[in-house]
Image (cartoon, rainbow, N blue to C red; front, top):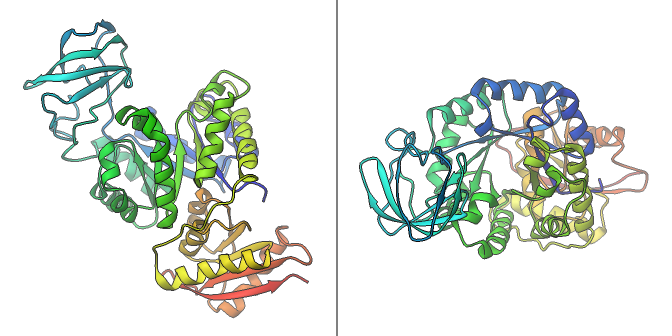
Length: 452
């Protein structure tokens, strides 16, 4: 395997066909993102079934909208110093206040319009209006994002549609659900209760409040996404790179998934080549240690979705050749942590050609990935759902193989399976890390194998 960083591709009009999905997989996509902001609940179900039909081995990430606000009033010019009154309806707050969340905005707090390009300060809060003074004006267009970076969103994170979308994800056995505008661990717990025990919950970090409870969010969920679009609006843009790095490093320390997203190859929506700044940006994400990088508009509405994935794969390979990540893995189940850390250290010491992880839930494979070994991790599991969840993990190749309960029988069977699939050659050295055939078993076996 010559590329370890995984690629998430967003489906949209430019790619949402059987042929489009297959071509993106061939180009290097491992997981498909379905953006609920642009799908009805039934449209979501159809999109899930499309991916399952066209690429049965690919993973699916359902991106739940959460309390996103968009301006729905008329286009207008807002001059510096002007005082303007907006209704909750115009700001996209009408559906949130009372039904989804409670508005706790106070005078003096910021209201950002047009995806952060226009800054205003709240002067007064009415029953269903906000009166603001424009500090940094400009053209306000319908449909652009509205942000309240100083305001904590209280109440229920999820709308009725969000809950329906999560229900569809559960019914269709989707591997991963990402939830937007998470502020605390409680938000993640709420989504997990709806999704059930099998799916993974990824918290999109877009609000400054989430950074205050980052460890709690990571402990409650399965990973984080650096959603740099809204995050870059709600915190100073110069803070985005260090925050991005912090998210990746802390996720690695806790054995969780880290995804970097938004505007990674934005110019390739219409251009055949990325800008040099975009190349540097993707390379930085790889060096930061992210498991996966994500394409949004590039594959959803771009002129050449396949070209964007190929470019992303090429950049990732180049960056991986120039980086050696430290082992930042810290906190986890002590027994499994000890075995996986030892497996990674042994693989490095003997310059192993691969690490073979026999896993039921995928937990030991996640901890191995957190160790960031240079050898590829061949994760063998009897469960198709587990295999799909591992598609986001850096350096992991998931393989579905039926296995007996006894480790002594399972290891030779797994070695034969990876040998048949072309992952082993004569003379290869393989470190084997295994757990027993049980959802609750810890990894407890370490084995060194030399391929004859």
